[in-house]
Image (cartoon, rainbow, N blue to C red):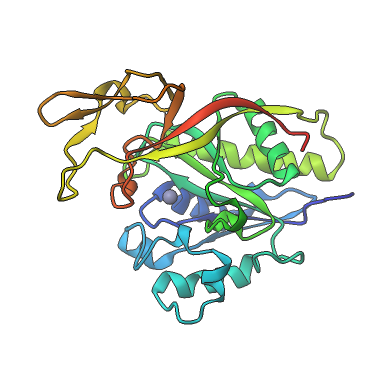
Length: 298
Ligand SMILES: [Zn+2]
């Protein structure tokens, strides 16, 4: 059938301290029957063994920002992750190729932010969006976040094959394994595999015209002093409430002295990746998004 999916990759350990993906890949590799579906082949693999060994996000740099076409083509980039990215690209890419070794990828991540079950998509591919809409239909608690910051040449692992997305589940600390997060993530994986089995065999009973998403608006950094030190924390009202609706005047931060720092924009936003530990070094405290229904008839 047209657009049939022949090979899917499930990857984990892209960030070596996000253990849910690491251990789910252990489970799938030990017993591949779990992820077997008759109409396509599924492979599972760890992506960053060096970081996993250290239980750190990365060895030299963030692997999940290392897959731009320019970086992949640049032989002068020789950090651990730059070399690794080129190896991974050969296995599941090459990126941009019509004959990519893999048709669809799910890269498994966790977040210290209270985001529940989430899928993060940069792709504009129709089938990828149908898969996400199907997953949302089957798992209503699932949230879909659209990141279009650098869609033309996204540098994520999930950007290597022509189709795919990142799964983010939390909150969970780095370096920690929790059964509920493990089960929730595995449920998303199975739901998406089921979608492609139905798609390949012509048994999908529904086409999705639209889906509710949280669309990227902007990143917000912590308030800082002249030296660049953080001078305020995430406000307690926002701390454990992922995807919270925020209107002008609502508190975003609380200074060390207890004063609120409020949202000043006129337009309503929803906050994601609030207080994600890995983003302190990137210089942002949260991502603001717009909740909307988007058409999938593009
Ligand atoms: Zn991650």
